[in-house]
Length: 451
Image (tube, rainbow, N blue to C red; front, side, top):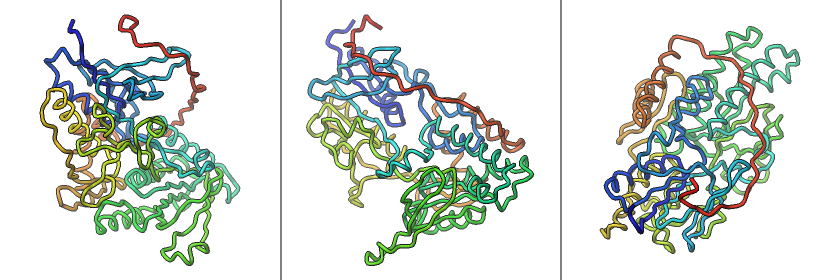
């Protein structure tokens, strides 16, 4: 047994945390003096770009999750939720439950990659009644909800209620919102033939976006192409439109005016709906906001090497780190591509720090962006080339399936996609309910022999 081992702790089992762990394993694969610990609330890596396809019933849920223990090799894994971080004592505390006590884990070096959560911008009524699409449970809940609305509308004689049941509203015109809207429309159209009393014209899918265009980050030409195609497929897009409230039955919204003098008298609208899916923004998790790290906009401030200035043994990456694009002088958008790039840089700099070598500044250049916008259609900006239509759709599939780290999962996804070409989607509505939130129990100091 090696004495005085150095312990590296990574917080977060998303793209950034898992990629950083894998890189550190390669750097220290022959070094028994380094112990690597990964802590994640879930014991799997969720492939989030394919969540809309799970919500639409195209992919099976277990095919887009990779058990973390099958990905890592020499890393110790803890499934647990981070309660707080003490950078002065170099301790991470995990919440306890009624089944296990909390744990305090000491570290010598720390990588924080805790991601983000949905931002409702202070609208408590929206938070209470809207659906989100960030987790596997979210995707399954949306799928059940869409099918439930079809079941209720099929035999509903009241035209007003019937219309509200068949109105589906997605708030946010970014990647998640547009891809979700396209997949939901595909599911509705495929399932409609089993509901003879529902006509095509009764089904309405709306996208509400506060900006003047959808898919920010894409070229204007590609964004307009996506807009036209979505509209052609029956999706109504309302630009420069902000949601003001949602009570579970009616969405209130207002037009965003460029002229500040007429802002107060801007046009007000309403949509009767029972289903709103919120994809309009993210915010860092509360653990980061209430931490001792210096933050801005809720994110940890890092230097050019992704280090936390006051604590040089701590690195922060992904959605919870504030790193400004030197070209635009604005923070980089929170994407999986950025998280992976920062994970590789943080792992390299951590290795350099431990082995007394020179660290490298983090430099990021996007490889491109892609979005699918319905059956066999997409838009992509790849290495300076703009691609649209079926070729962009094919590129999206090839790139994202190559990102799945396990070959068995790649095969399962390919089989799901193939089956979708020949067979109808399953419209069974699966009923499930969550249990009450677990209570907190007292903290147990980390002792190797306990486990």
